[in-house]
Amino acid sequence: MSTIPPTQAQQNAWKKSPDSELYINPLPVRIWHWLNAVGFVALILTGIQIRYANMFNVLSFETAIKTHNWVAFTVIANYFVWLGFYLFSDRITVYHPELNPRKFFDKAFKQFMYYSYGIFKGEPSPHKVLAYDKFNPMQSITYQIVMLLVVPVQFITGIMMWDIKRFEGPIAMLGGIHTVDTVHVLIFIFFVSFTLVHAYMGALGHTPSAHFKEMFTGYEEAEEKSDQ
Ligand code: HEM
Image (cartoon, rainbow, N blue to C red; front, side):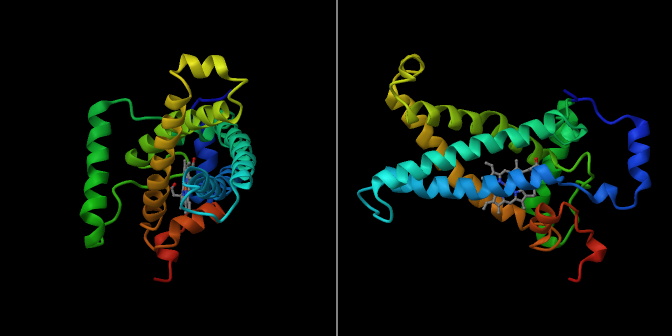
């Protein structure tokens, strides 16, 4: 397992290639991301059908549950593509937190001011995107909480409800099926909001499509190359 930041030699070699610092989203991340996004939208829609079966009738209850389960297991397997890639590559540096609280809050505040004010005046983002340091502090902390805490809890509560009999013991330990179900539904509501806000923020690059293209091509779209 390599969680060590790139050595100076690696960084120098990296800098020699003119395009390399623009290569911000390696293939495994792109495959994981779009499969995950499609999977989450399918889980949200089938989840709504299961939860509000009395209000919608697009799918039968049985089909909605079967589809929800199959998509969920695909999304869970896909999660390990993301986790494995970051654990076994030097790109883990993009997720290294800023350990100095003063520096962290200073950078996060600047980024917050940018999103709430500077962006509307056409100011540049205070964070410069680099291959090994691509996230601003707000993205970094949000993605870490989502990927290392919220997503796993959603997987675990979902797996428990998939086979209540088999997971009887752990369900009882967590306070019963109603507690497990409530946590799963609250996180489901969180993901509906997260996906909307995240997709909106994805459109806040130097052009509305810049970040989306980057997640398809892997390369950061440099501002001067833009035709806008
Ligand atoms: C319609 C759905 C979605 C769209 C349009 C979308 C769009 C994007 C875009 C444009 C980026 C690149 C910009 C950035 O790094 O912030 C990105 C990155 C990311 N998205 Fe999404 N996303 C969607 C769904 C999701 C969902 C459901 C999750 C998590 C459950 C998610 C988690 C992430 C993470 C963790 C990254 C950073 C990836 C990395 O480099 O490690 N996205 N998304």
